[in-house]
Each structure stands twice: as structure tokens, then as C-alpha cells.
Image (cartoon, rainbow, N blue to C red):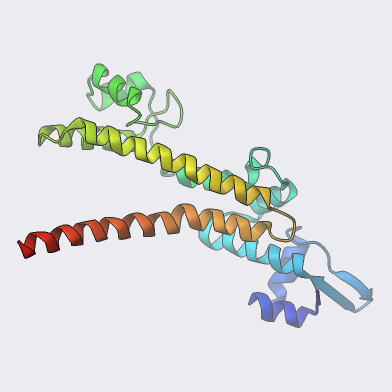
Length: 225
């Protein structure tokens, strides 16, 4: 379909000045020019505006980052890393400005037993982004495991938790690959939004709600005895 500027504004809830700014910045393609003062926009413009707004408001991407991502979009997840870079950065959960340590520095700074650290790495409980890249995030997990041990909780339950996390990650990967398999220029921004929402919104919702259900049932069972 083709749209007038007024229709674009109404459909996207984005001001005319912002739409024209996106075009000047190279984030949106030029409008179809029917006459010198008559321009028409298409469904692609609406789709792209949705993507731009989401990346700016939800991910905090800059115009340059968005422009680079749009220039490098294609049908492959692995070959369009620029599109998923904000996702990868968020999944890494490493705060901006975090201090990074080599393994040796990490052991010394946090006074961790090297044998214990190797056990956590081998069991997949510690998952540094790179072999020699440890942060306070890894330190918090070490402290958590030590706390479990201190109160006598069986270590095997933590390993089981890790195995479930691995299985979930494989399932999520299949989900993302299916999204990529149907991606086109017309729907790609909607699919990327689904990817972000499923990984960060739906996962938290489902995990927390099912934990709530289990705890609630346990409480009810205890009260009814």
C-alpha cells in the first residue's frame, strides 16, 4: 500500500519532522515521488519505523548503529551479526564499565581456590564470555555456590539447574532460527522485536509465573495438612 505523510504519522505515531529526519539520516529510504510536491510512502517505511523506535527505546541503539544494522540485514542470523549485536550485548549481562580480569587476576583478587574454580568451569556453572575474561558477574556466582555449600545444599541440584539452562538455550536458538527462516524486508523488524520480547519478556514471565505456581501449591499443601 501507499501512504501520504499524514497517514504515515497517524499509523506510526511519529511526527512528520522525525520521519523526514530518519530519511535525511539514511535510516529510511526516500519516498516515492509522484510529482514535485507529492510523495508516497510504503509498508516498508512503516515496518522500518517500528524497528527504529524499538531499537532506540528498548535497546538504546544510536542512529549510526541502526543504520549499520539496516545496511547489513539479510536472511541469515549468523551473517547478520550487526542486527543481533544489541541482543548479544544484553545477553552477556556485563555492565558497561565492568572491570575485567584474566583467570589469574580473578583468582587472586577474589581469593578463590583454583581447583574450585576449575570445577565450576567444567560443570558449566561459570560461563565467562571468553576464557580469560572474568568479571564481578562471575564472582557473584562463585559466592552464590559457596553459600549453597555453606548451608549444606546438594551441589548436584545446581548442576541440574545448569543442564536445564543449556536445554532452554538450545530451544531458544531453534526459535530464533525459525524466525530467521521466514524473515523478509517486509517483516524483519517485527521478527526482531519478537526475538527480543521472547528472550527478555516472555522468558522472565514464564519462569517467574511457574515458580510462583509451584511455591503457591507447596504453601497450600502445607497449610492443608
